[in-house]
Image (spheres, rainbow, N blue to C red):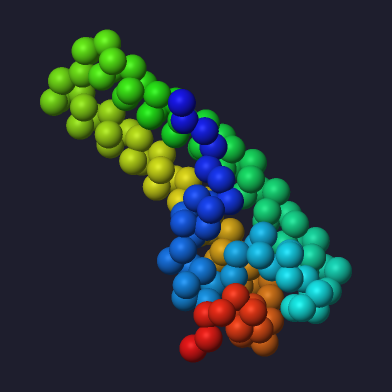
Length: 129
């Protein structure tokens, strides 16, 4: 049975941003003291997280349904090459949407944090340049 992504899987969805110094909102909030976030920055970060979670849960449920439909089609023997490709495209579009949600949240953090905070974030996460 399929389930929603774990924290480890969520990190993978935004790895391209994370590894290139674009902070993740969840990590920023966990490091709020080290980053000396202002009250406004903390509130903005929390809003980004909440929006990301809302959107990701919706898209995650769609992904689970798509994967389940694919598995059922194989189990029932109703799959063929033509509808396999269509089902795979649909599932991968959903997966791309889920990734977009996570990567967009990282991009939004760049307008919340100062340049110094972004550098400090990278140092604390071990992404020194």
